[in-house]
Amino acid sequence: MLTDSDLQALWLTARLAGIVTAILLLLGTPIAWWLARTKAWWKGPVGAVVALPLVLPPSVLGFYLLLAMGPHGPVGQLTQTLGIGLLPFTFWGLVIASVFYSLPFMVQPLQTAFEAVGDRPLEVAATLRASPLDAFFTVAVPLAGPGFLTASVLTFAHTVGEFGVVLMIGGNLPGVTRVASVQIYDYVEGLEYSEAHRLAAVMLIFSFLVLLAMYAWRPNSRTET
Amino acid sequence: MKTKSLPKAILAACALLLSLSAQAGKITVAAAADLKFAMDEIVTIFKQANPGDEVVVIYGSSGKFHTQIRQGAPYDLYFSADIAFPRELAKSGFAAATVKPYALGRIVLWSANLDASRMTLANLTDAKITRIAIANPKHAPYGKRAEEALRSSGLWEKVDPKLVYGENIAQTAQFVLTGNAQVGIVALSLAVNPELSSKGGYWLIPDNLHKPLEQGFIITKRAEGNAVAKRFADYLDSKPARAVMTRYGFVLPGETARK
Image 1 (tube, rainbow over the protein chains, first blue to last red):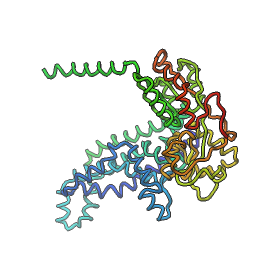
Image 2: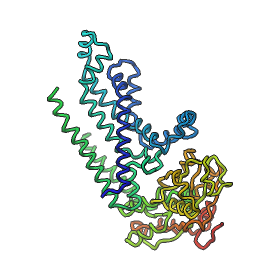
Image 3: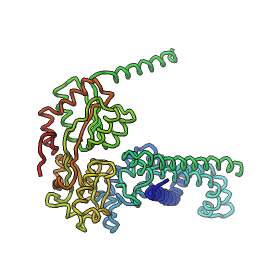
Image 4: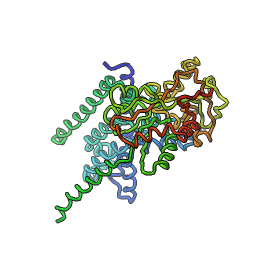
C-alpha cells in the first residue's frame, strides 16, 4: 500500500499541477490568442520564447531560477522587499517555475485551436455587432473548446511529470516541494525499490489514463463539430 | 552511388566508435560528490605521471552510483562517501577486488555570507537563520552524519522546520553558495576549496557528535585486469595523492583526526 508520505506527495503533485494549469489558462489564453491573430514581426520571437522550455534542459531553467529567485537575484530582491521572502524551497516557488516550464504545453495547442477557428466566424460576429471581446468569448472560445481541453490536460500532465526543475529549486521538503517524481527518486536512491515500484506504478497508470481519456475524447469531438 | 556508399559510411563510423571505446588506457571513475575538488587534482597529477592514461570522473551521489553499478553501469572504479555501499556491492560480486577504505570525511557548518567559523551548531536555532541546507539523510552519507550531529546536540527538533535537503553534498553546498540557505552542513573537503572558503567561513563539527564517515572504493568487476584502473587505485596510496587528500581535510587510513 501507499504510505502517508506517498499520499502527501501525490496530493502535493495534484495541487501543484492544478494551480499551474489554472494560472496558465489565464496567462496562456491571451498569449495564444495574440499569437494566432497577430501579423506583427515579433510574433516569431515571442513564439520562440514561449516554445523555449520544450527544448531547454530543465537544469538550465532550474539554474537560472535558483539564481534569479535567490537573495542576490532580481526576483529574490523583489520578493524580499515585498516581504514575501525567498521563493526557492517553497510551494509557490515551484508554481512559478512550473508556469515557465509548462507554458508551451498550454499556449501551443490553444494557438493551433484559435488558428483553426479562422477569421470568418469572427467577421460574422462583427457584422452582428459583437464587440471583439464578446466575439472572443461567445464565438472563439466555444469553437476552440477541444483545444482548451487538450491544452489543460497536457499542461496538467506535464507539470505532474516535472522533475529536474523541482530537484534544483525544491529542497525536497515533505508536503511543500517533495512531489511524487522526487519521492520516487528518493526511494531509488535509498535502495527502497518496492516503495519506488508502488509509487511509480501509480504514476504510470495515471499518465496512461490521462492520455487515454484525451485521445478517446478527441475523435468524438470531431464528429460533433 | 550515393545510396550505396551511405550504409558503408555508417558502418565505418560505427567501427571507428567501437575501436575508440575498446581502446585501452581509458577508465571511468564514479566518485562521491564530496571528492569533487580533491579528485580533480589527483586526476591531474595522475595524468602527468602517466601520460598515456585517460581518466574520466563522474561525480554524484554514492547511493545512485551504487544502484547504477548494480544495473551494469560502465564505471571502472567507484568511490563512495559511505563504505557500506561498496561493501554491499562486493558482497554481491560486483567488485574485482576487496573494498579499500580511502578516507574519513568530516562535516562542517558553512555559510557564504555569515562567518560560520564563529558559530556552533547551537547558533542554528537563531531566529535570523531561516534555512539550513543538509544533504538528504535518507540516502546521502553526509546527510546522515549531519542529522546525527544535530540529534546528538539535542537540536534536531528545533532546526527540523528550517531544513532543506540537497540531493547530494555538492547540491547542498550550492544551496548555500547561492544564498538560498544561509548556512549548511557540508563536507569539509568542499568547504576548504577556495571558491567556497573565500566566502563566509566554516566551523568543523566535532567528530564525536556523529558516527565516522568511513569512505571506501572498489575496482568494479568490469575493470578486472584493467591495468589503468589498477594503476589509478594504487596511485591513491602515493605520496602526492595523499597530500592532496589531506589538504582537502580528509583523514587518511592510519592517521588521526584533528579535533
